[in-house]
Image (cartoon, rainbow, N blue to C red; front, top):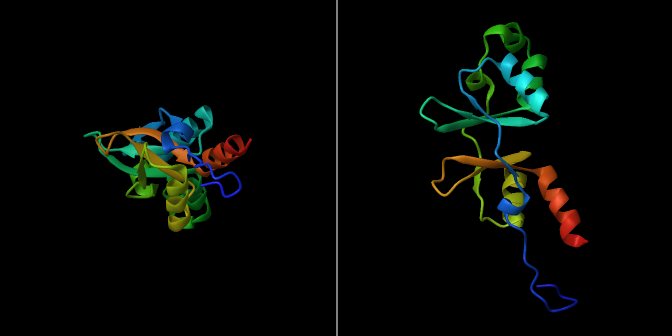
Amino acid sequence: MDVATGWTVQMPTVAELMTADPLIVPADLPVSDVARLMDFYRVNGVAVQDWDGELVGFLSQTDLVHALATAPLWDAWPGLTARQLMTAPAVTVAAGVAADEAARILEARRIHRLVVVGADGRTPIGILSASDIVRGIAEWES
């Protein structure tokens, strides 16, 4: 409730703020190909699925930078796959969750994005990033 006006303020939902249709890569895709896709589509991370379509993790720019900065990983770079560098399991959120709850998950986990899943609880339908939440705050407050 807004104390000054007494009105109840409706918090936007994850679905209202997320980026829909996330880039999804197979778990066995070489990380060099993942990096090219992320650069081409100008995204900061990708959902990773196994051959059964199961969401198994998330691979971010930070994961790729970590590989570059870690000698054993960098030495293995030509053969590394998404599965070997991804963060697993992927941290997910339902589309109907309020933005403030999603922000609490990001803060508690010290991560920058969540995979938004559909009604089945496993199909990626979007990505909610900290940037999406900040954009939502800016729009919501104006």
